[in-house]
Structures are given as structure tokens and as C-alpha cells.
Length: 541
Ligand code: SF4
Ligand code: SF4
Image (tube, rainbow, N blue to C red; front, side, top):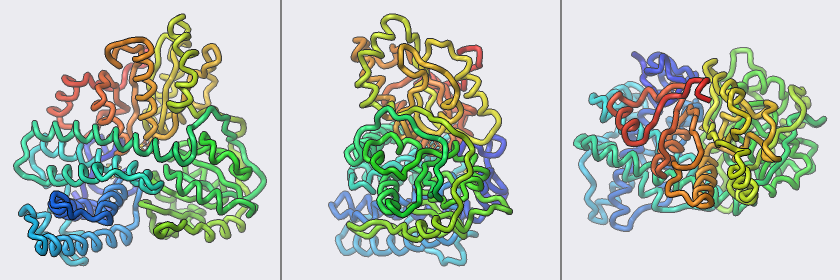
């Protein structure tokens, strides 16, 4: 076994990737990511001790957040960038330990603190500190469930921080949780409580990002999004980071270069602040996993602001027009550096490159409709409540979550088609691409697919559910006519799931497969406490 990773839904045989990731991650990259998480735990343990004495440092919070984020599935394949972060982590830990000594702060005596190795030994050392170094299957499962939740939380927190919204309690929790998963004496019941706590902080992170996005760009509103192409060369932006979106739109204005969203950036089209740019043409293509053919056809520049990067085919033509920024990275792709304090990112190189490219090849035409985040749906609340009361809407089906490349995900298209015509789909995340272009119609003018936005906007779906609970005077959100059939892929979906559980949502069906990192005991806990189940048969619809 040259590596072990089981953090995503596409893990080999639904057990674990042991030679090379199904995602394309090489064993060496997996080792560096394992080491980075280990080093980050060490940094977090010292920062936690310093925080308890009022000596926490903001820069360290940002380091921890970025380190967690960049190990998310498909975010960073660049060994050099990962190595730099590990070196930085060792240096940071030394500085923090020196500060702790100076301030008389007691730091727990744990192996994560003692570790200090040379760069040449990074990869060989990683084998001894990876996922399988914890031998108890249930403890390992709960620890990894927590860490994967933290990775998702870090991604959302970083996007909020980029818009100037931070909460130190989130950082304090990340450190506390990284300390707790580093304990060798932590019992199962404490770990279960930690997992649930992670979900509570997940809600906080998503609420923070919702606030950051809507304060900066307005509330998403019902929008018809063009899926065709214009005549100019373009830049295709993917990921979640709306600050990058804003600065790219500003800097491309009047240059003759158009901007399109791809995959998870589609919901940027729903924000009022971005609609003023005539060169923001619409959305090109589909979910992340279709990027190889779609990026070829796009012809222009590609900008990744987050995962999900699919490693390029050997004969790919677009590496020299592919850029990463933030926590994403790919060997050979240019990386746009972080903005300086109070400054902006510089996208001029991308824009100049785009000017030399051909316009996109049309792969579709028409429009899709979205923008049903909580503010918009609550504006339609009377209409929605009336439709439920008259029986025009019998049930809401939450089909939020992820898309992926496996054929088994065709199930979600079939499921959407099989739903009775009086069912409305509530969605957020990439899963929508399995059914958002189907002619599913509407109910009294309410579209049968209500797209709230990105996966973090699953928070919006909860706000909607809580408002409906109130409108119908019900005791519990679980008494609403809502059915959950959620698709997951990577760790942002893990924090969304934990957040839903912490809010008391029960009977969630999760597919296409249950996570490989859940041990049978942990699955039993989730079934008993929350009624979690596998994806339903098609005829259940
Ligand atoms: S991220 Fe997923 S596909 Fe990639 S190595 Fe890990 S488990 Fe395998
Ligand atoms: S919906 Fe899923 S696959 Fe898409 S960005 Fe969110 S977590 Fe990743």
C-alpha cells in the first residue's frame, strides 16, 4: 500500500485509495497532505494553549484554515505548494513554542508538538502519521469524520474571511477539535459529541458565509441564466469565491474579454451586484467532473478559486491557459497570489492571455433558472404556503449536494424524473446539474426545481424549512412534508451533513454510497440517533 485516503465518495471500491487516488492524486501528494494535516494539528495545539491565555495570533488562524482547505478533495495537486505549507507550519510551530515559553504557557506534551523533520524526509515520514496510524476502527472513523468536517468548515470560513467576515470562535473551535482528535486517550462518546459540535460550528460557518456574500453582493434573486456563448474570448471561473468573482469582473470590464461561470460558480449569476456587468455572459457547461471536455471547448482562460480540479488528460490543450488561486493549486498552472492587506488580486495576466484565445465553442444554448435562496423563497412564502395548503404541492424533496463522475449518479436524474408532479425539488450544490436542465415544469408558477445556490447555501434550505415550520405552526422541522435525498462527494458536503444533523434534521438519505470512513459502529449511531439511511429505491418516489 503506497497511500491511504478514503475521504471522498469516489474512493476506490468504496474502501480507500491505496495506490493512486481515483481523483488523480499521486501517492506522494497524498503523503504530503497527510503530513500537512499532522503539522497543522501541532500548530493548532500550541495556538489553542496560547489562546487560552489570550495570546492567539490571527495569522496562525489563517494558516490553519488554509492548510485544512487545501487538502480537500481535488483542491491542490501541487507538491511544491504543499511542501511550502509544511515548511511554514514547522517554522510557525517553532515561533509559537518560543512564545509559549516566554509567556509561561503550558503546551500539552504530544507527538505533534515534538515532530520536526527535514524536507527530504517528508514523504517517508508521512506513512507513520497517516489515517491508518490509528488502529481502532471506530476511533479512526470518528476522528476522520471530525477532520473532514473541519476541512469543509475551513473552506466556507475562508471565503467569508476573504470578504472581511471572521469569527474567532470558529478558529478556536478548529483548534480545539484538532487538539481533541490528536488525543490518544479520547473515548468514543467524547468523539461522538465532538462530531456533533463540529456540525454546530458548521452551521455557524455557513451562516457567516451567507452573511458575507449577501451583505457584499445582495440577496440572490430569481434569475434566468444564459447557457449559450458570446462572440468574445472569455474567462471561465469556477469554485466558490465571490470576492475573486467580483475582482475578476471589475478588472475585465471594457477589455473585450467576457466572463462565464462554471460548475459551482453558477450561483454567482443570481447576485444583484454582478448583474451590472454586461460582459458577464452566463454559465458555461456543467458540473466539475465534465471539465476536461468542456475546458477544451471553452478555448479561453480557466480560473480555479476552489476545488474541484480534475487532473488534465495527457493531450489536454489548456494547461497554459489554466490558473489557480487561493487554496487551489495544480503543477504547471500559474497561481495568482493572495491579495495584500487592503489590496486586490491582480488578474491582468489572465486577461492578457484571454485576449489571445478564441471565443468559446457553443455546447448548449438556452437558459436555466435559479436564485431561490432563503430571502427569495421567503418573499414567495405566501404563494408556497398556499400551494401546500391546497395540496398543489404535496412534498418538498431536498436533493442538494454533489455531483460526481460515476455512472451511478444517473440515479439522481432518474429520481427527479420519477418524482410525482406535485413534488418540488429544493437543491443547492453541484447535484443540480443532474436535473436542472430537464423540463420539470412548475406548480402554479413555482418552478419544480428551486436552486438555492452553492453547497454552502444548503444553509439557506434550512432557513426555508424553519420558516415553513413556523408558517404551519409545527413543533418540529421533521413534521414538514420534506424528504431528504442528498448526494455527497467531498468534505464540504461532510460539514453540510453534520450541520443538518446538529439542527435536528432527521431521516436523511445519503448516496450514492455511505462514506467509506464511517465504521459499522458509527453508521449504527447515525441510524439510531438520526435515522440516516442509504439512497432510496427509485420506486419510493
Ligand atoms: S480524495 Fe477521494 S479519490 Fe482522491 S485519493 Fe482521497 S479518497 Fe481517493
Ligand atoms: S456541491 Fe459537493 S462537489 Fe460541489 S463544491 Fe460542494 S461539496 Fe464539492
